[in-house]
Length: 277
Image 1 (spheres, rainbow, N blue to C red):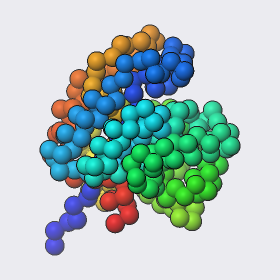
Image 2 (cartoon, rainbow, N blue to C red):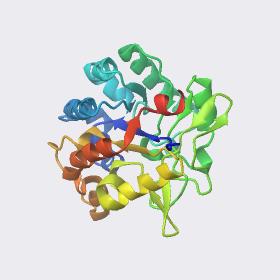
Image 3 (cartoon, rainbow, N blue to C red):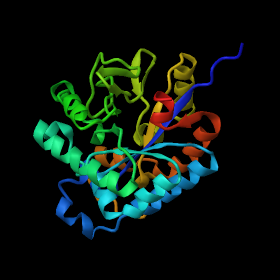
């Protein structure tokens, strides 16, 4: 009897280069409209790659992007991909109270659903900004009819925010609400995150592939994600801090090649198709 082929999750956090957390002290949200965005070109490149490899994906769309670039969201939907919410304003959940979070989420969902003519079932917090003090967000997701979240790193190792001891497999955290955790593997007794373009760019690629294979052999789908600004690079590099500059820009020119290799070597699809078949 042949072993079951595991299908992993390919996802995209649809935001522009000026939305990133590390630029909040340089670019106010009131000035976003003045910036030359690359999100449209970046999404187009990602869609082309996915089409070439006959792969579906989940696009976690920032409400601001859906509002200002509705044609981008329409194109994602027309090509058969799942569209979920990344919030509206890219504020970290750790910086919001429940009421502020709920208003931000509702604004994003309303705009995305109106633009895509599809129901939003999923959510991902900006920068995975969920910790033990923000688990109230589960209740707010349920109130707004969200069916799954994919925000939590089940570790505090090498991540902005996370939860040590949190289950690493998809599971229901509330009635009708599934958590699809961001992927972490164990390597040499050390927690190694796999979800996010930074890890794809920074980890030695043979090691990154080995970790996916390792998790798949255990029957675990891996969740990966990238951003449009990791493929379309025609924007200014404004971050001065050496550490933050490294996190944001290191090996951006390797992403497209690595993604194509992964899509050729492994099976990927959307959250809906992997966990809600």
